[in-house]
Image (cartoon, rainbow, N blue to C red):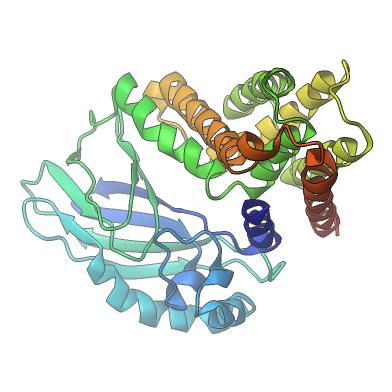
Length: 363
């Protein structure tokens, strides 16, 4: 139960979850352009994003919230002052250091102040004439980076953790990943979307677990869920099916409520429950596809990257189930009071959180 309570407490603050920076880079006439889409308020507030899943956990959360509410014109000079010093921490080597210079910042208007807005920060630098490759160092405290090369054939796409360097990137192209590399690089992206950042998906999987911690009903449910979200993840990633997040996100919250409430009113796996879970899996797959769309997939290795992301998602889900089983199911599943003292109270908590999210996402 302590594990569930911790997950629940974190889940309420989902509106302040941390997202990776997505940067496009290219070189034109000797000028390196780095166009970063990022939650700039978190950077200006001084939040250490390494391993951070929720800005509310930071001591600078009040400053972040205040910056998030600022109109774009008021925030812009603060960003420029910050960027002038911060860009020096992004080390670019192309045979020689390539200092980056602030060029512009595009900040959206304030919408829902509880949700991060994606700003575009553009920086440039002069690449030495004889340079053929470059290496980018992403600084400590900046969280994760999705780096995408543009305007060349077979471009580089990579996922870089804070404090790490990119591999050498060929400026003329040809640094695209092999199938195995694309698969391996997208597995942690999928896993990270479940643990620790996918609180809604975690609670849905826990809802499946708390119906019964026994293997057979759990396998039926997880199999239906996995098959369904794999289908819509693939269709969404290929652009064949697109549904507004304004529809998908409330439905995901509603699916959490449904499975939790059903756990309360029934004590076994009905034949139609896997079919219902299959339907909810289709919805969750659209949510996964939305996240993957933000990262982008390497054009030359679309299928291996997609499969890697899906494998990462599955590993994340299996890890959630393993943790639940080792902390709860292994010790208490055969107790006569398991359902009354553990399954039903846990499902009630999950249902309340799902209902809160549903109302929040609709209103």
